[in-house]
Length: 143
Image (tube, rainbow, N blue to C red; front, side, top):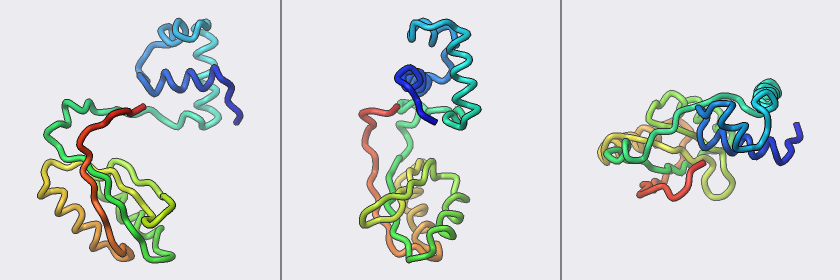
């Protein structure tokens, strides 16, 4: 599906606040409420918008340890490794990437020792070759 500039602006506003009312979004886009509602429904129907989620405030999670865990996987074992990682609730996201590592997991845990245990569990998954972890100090931009 090809998106136009208005669709892109609409998606940007929804990324900022998916709970904003259709009327609020319509005012920001200088469109009618009905037009905005129709566009949202079309984007959902076409699969451009696949769902809505909750973003946790950084202040709330200040006591937690957030980290990127880079994971190198043995050839042809990405599917089984991915399935094993999906079962770990501490992982918020898992991305397939190019470069030295094959996957990057985003994790949130309660302590450094919990992060240590998590990286050990990830490293013990059949097919994981090696990991490298970077703790997130702060988020400068998130949309």
